[in-house]
Each structure stands twice: as structure tokens, then as C-alpha cells.
Image (tube, rainbow, N blue to C red; front, side):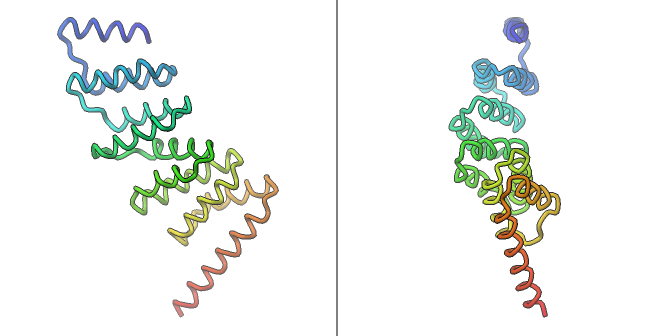
Length: 195
């Protein structure tokens, strides 16, 4: 990666101006290597050279910041991205929300999802629940699963199976019982109103 920084500086000296893709590639590489200092340096240099970052550029930096538990900085970048009219991809949304959940800040994770239109909210929350279940963060997954039910009664079967499996493997039978009762009650009420 050191060579890419020297190459970039030499290219500019020769009058070759890097493009958005050039900067984004370098930023992604630095983030993968864990070198956020250089990633952020090139992110700011990008703007200085009149190149606007893509959502991929923001996503790479947000992911890099999350890996180093710099959630406040990642959230500021996420907010900046949205203010500039860029739409974060699902990976970026889930990464940031998941890292907040890992740090037991479910409120921040919910705030990230609240900005989304219903369809994206549901898709992102389903992915987040499955990821939380994979890591046996069942209580946190239950919170988001109930929020999903608040938004949409049609439960994603894969998410439901992942949640129930994680509950059983974590001996959290009460969560499955609560969920089953809620689904039955709401489906039963929905069937009564359609008759």
C-alpha cells in the first residue's frame, strides 16, 4: 500500500489527476489493511481534487471505522453521506447497525433504520436479525424481530428460522414462546377482520 501512495503522489506531480475510482480503490485498500489514517487522508484529498466520493467510498470508510470501534466517526460519515443525497447500500447499513448492537447501543441502530423507507427497513432489519442470531445475540435480535413484526406481519421464513434456532440453542425458550403467541394473536385478529 505504501507503493500506491507514492505512485499517487508521483502521478499528480506528472499532471495525471486521479479519478473518483482511483481514490475509492485506494481508500478501500487502506481500509482493508486497517490504515484509516491514510484512508481518511485520501478521502479528504479526493474532495480537494474535485472528486465527489461514491456511496462505495463512504461504505469502505464506515466499515473501516466500525472495525476499529470508532462508531461516532462512522455515524458522522453515515449522516454526511445521507445529507449529500447518497444512499448507503445494505452492507453499510447493516455493518453500522450491527456494530452499535454489539456495543449494546440498540437505540443508535434503530435510529439508522428509522431513516429508511419501509421496504429497505424491512430488508435491512431481516439481515440484521439473522446476523445477530449467528452471533447468539438473541435478546438484541428479539428487539429487532418485534420491530419487524410492528412493520410487517408477513415474517421472512429464513429470519424466523434463524431466530428460533438461535433461541433454542441459547436456551431462550421464553422468547420463542412470546413470539409465537404474538404471531398467532395478530394473525388470528387479522383473519377475524377479513371475514
